[in-house]
Image (cartoon, rainbow, N blue to C red; front, top):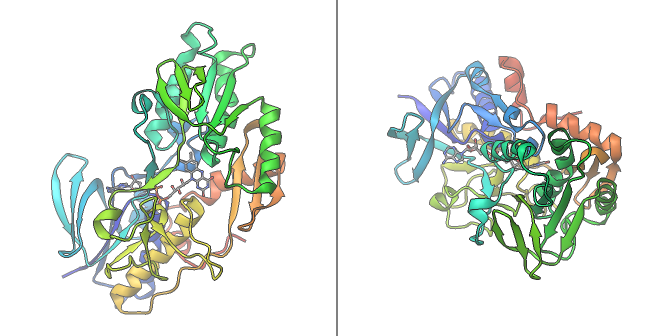
Length: 402
Ligand SMILES: Cc1cc2nc3c(=O)[nH]c(=O)nc-3n(C[C@H](O)[C@H](O)[C@H](O)COP(=O)(O)OP(=O)(O)OC[C@H]3O[C@@H](n4cnc5c(N)ncnc54)[C@H](O)[C@@H]3O)c2cc1C
């Protein structure tokens, strides 16, 4: 009988976990000859979430079936509804709408995160988002539809709720969306509304200077210290009682981990992320590993924990994939370590700001920052070619981008 590794989620963590596990099985060919790896996800493509604020969101999907074939990983197109850890099986609803039970010996949970949408009046009905591919495509279609609407202040006003990373990238990219739609003569009014007392409160002093320069350059307004309390078809109201008439409201209010985490671990943080041991095993669930946005993992020896970010998901995926296969074969697992931390924030036509270190030291700005952002967004975060050797090499947890 085959021994089975099941990976739940085909995002950054899941896809790279598949490569990491396949690499170990390839290296341990004899011992691993009876091991079968399967990935289950709702669609056979990687949705490149970090690019969903860009002008062509419908193009931000990378099909991965040929890649999985190249490394002998099976695929089930479906959604995991329940994880029965005591019975080592999951309930899957397939794309055809059938429900089936899938067994595993070891599981890797990488079902990612979703935008946090609090129960604010009108939010669910009227606010757009750039969180998932379908959200971003819906927003893009709405923006295109504005061309045929009367030229009013509300049509030309765009409220972005949340001044964190996603809000800043969405707001600063809006002029590039809108120029071809509204024409050169319309100057869109873009307003970021941030509940905290400053834009990008978590960003640190270094990049903030670049952010404020970019917002000035692009003519983007900000409202800080008061959140949005309601949304309707014609705009928003903030906590100060200010009404802003706008036909477009984009909500970027933070992310929460997939609800599957609560099924396997009672130890979840504020964002629903599971606690894991050094080798990315879910605390208290010995046959389940986790990676990406569903876990909070120690990245270094200085108490820095992973963030809901693609750079952490990619590396944790490799380590979790390596470890799940090693554990099944009875060889030692390895500690997840990723001490290098960088951020690259796109700031539209101004450029981008690239920082290194947890204290976010600015290394590149303007056009130079943009070149780095494009390298990250078009190469580093994409899956390798469906060539067995390259694919297995990409699953190496100790890979270097140098
Ligand atoms: C607009 C935007 C900009 C961003 N910019 C950056 C950036 O500049 N840098 C950065 O590092 N990060 C960025 N991020 C964050 C980054 O996209 C996430 O941290 C990353 O996608 C996490 O990877 P993941 O594999 O853990 O989860 P995801 O990418 O969310 O993938 C989860 C996968 O699991 C699947 N899944 C979910 N539920 C189930 C289920 N029940 N059964 C089966 N499959 C399931 C999903 O369909 C998906 O395939 C950005 C995010 C957004 C939205």
